[in-house]
Image (cartoon, rainbow, N blue to C red; front, side, top):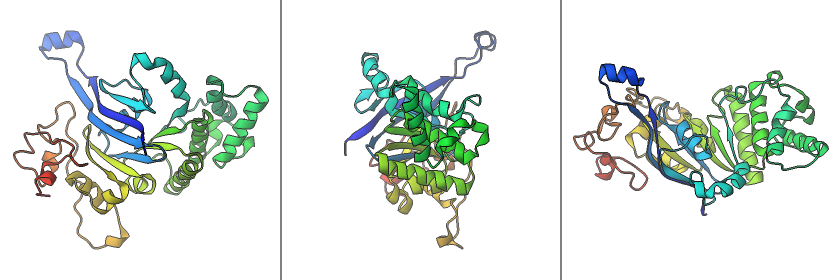
Length: 326
């Protein structure tokens, strides 16, 4: 399978400096937060690539750069070979726009509460001029509502008249309205009850099989990722520390951080087994530790880990693994 999405050396810095006058008076330099640092991965057509990690690891920033909501400070995103940043490819990028959509964490905050659901779902159809005539648009909206498990008559309701799970179904219908092929889900089920989460995840998998969709799935919930992902990238403090097929990652995690995350997940098959809880916290991203940023929390860290940033080799960025100490 050829790469549908290609992400290369993606970086994103945020200026978190104090105002100019404060810096002059206090003699402080400008300060930058590196939210994403040299991240690279590819996604084949029809697969689900998941990015996992604790809050503050840079997952959502990557998602927003991939769909073009946030410009990268460096690096490149290519979707079907078209650059999302190169000004020379602006015309091709406009034609690509309708095929890329995002499903946000909060389905209520991402909708206009004053619009009926029918208008919300029809908006991408009108924006991209996909169907002519109001009758045909209404028919397509009813078809999309049926596709996500709602009734065509629901188009007359407002977002507040739906439950959280139903609102997320509306958000998925809106994403599909533009004939999207690539969907980015930024924690799309984390605001929902567990039973409803399963329904939405199953719906997303069914739609992927029926429509040949490609997903970038952002989550901190490893149980959700295990259910959804073909391949998984584990992020820590802005960097990918491990990339592997989902089956391999859950059976044989290699990076100490991945092991720590998986060890914290309840598993009935290992009741009574001694567990190592996730210890410590993510360091301050404005002033990260030198070397491997995970070294203050890592039981395998040595002097090299505290001085030298490990490259991502053979799917893992860890000196201990590469030296055979892990």
